[in-house]
Image 1 (cartoon, rainbow, N blue to C red):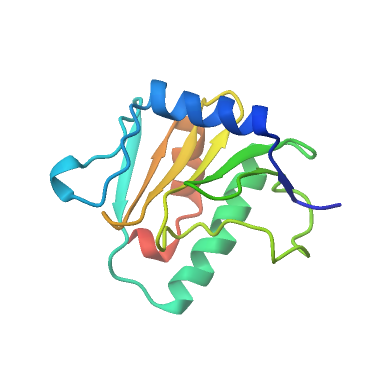
Image 2: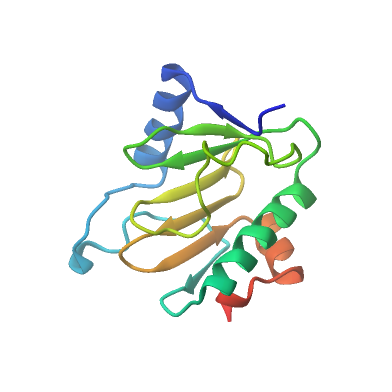
Length: 151
């Protein structure tokens, strides 16, 4: 089964409306406007300016591993790519569908991975070169299986 299911227009609107309203999301390339979103406590932010290809590969693997650890089989999360196709992402399913996916490193667009009730999330900021995590469950899982890019 496909691990990346394109969101319907209703799902897309619901997820982005919540990002704009609850997280006060204001996308901007200007550092004077950052941070571009407000995070609930607890949260942690990592500077990911310095990286190698091996760091990105490690980040991808650790993110999948962490998301699998805190979700149950057949549970989806929101995978949001600002101004692009967004998905319901099923971390436990096989990744054979490489063409349709959102990477975990914010390499040009905001990338957000959010628990469907918005209890935890992973938010990548492309111009700030940062990745923020919120929610105790997600933070603790990444502390236990930390990507090298997080230092």
